[in-house]
Amino acid sequence: MLTGPTIDVYDRKEFLHVINDAVPVIPAKSAVVTVEMTKRRLTPDAPFPPGVRDDLLASTERLLTLARETGVSVIHVLSALRPVEARARANTRVARAWAAVGESPSPYGPVPDESVDVQDGTFKPDFAISVDEGDFIIKTKKSLSAFYQTDLEWLTKALGVDTLILAGANTNADIQSTAYDASCKAYKVITVRECVATWFGEDLQELGLQQLARCQGWVLGLDELAAKLKAASAETEAAT
Image (cartoon, rainbow, N blue to C red; front, top):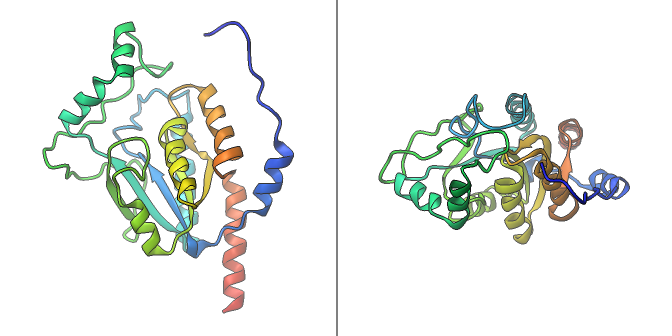
């Protein structure tokens, strides 16, 4: 644990309340995007704080049920590094530094091996969450962002989607990188507070959520999002 100067998180509750209250969520123009919700990453021994993994899975199931009930598209994005790609990642400057000090990037324990033993990049997805027949699957992710070298942008444009609702792990890495790319591409970006988690530390979880809420888009609670989606669905039904 570091000692010395501490940094307080600025209170932006009033600002966040205003922007969260004002954001419209139109089901037909929205897509839930789950990121790396796989059994390889979310193993029972994955290095999250106690209870966080189980809460993440349960909350994401609630989100998926909500999306399917209100007509929101669902897209699952996951990676599958070939062994040679996993070795290349392990040879980066940061990975070598962690190996040199004999510690894990997670303060809670060793991170799981997520490589897939295939040559051509094809594999059967190992989802830790439910996947319905109408869901879309993207399994070409190689780096942090769900956009980088994938067809996520192409798919969402085909679906007429301009709002992404993010869920998955890790908050300060994959989720934040995806949100950066999405905001640069002029998407509305909503992160669901209960549906993201990180194994890099509770400090980076909070700071990641602050960054996402105050700079990249909106951070909504699951109940808050549900109210918006259900109200929008009721308005659509009343107009038809």
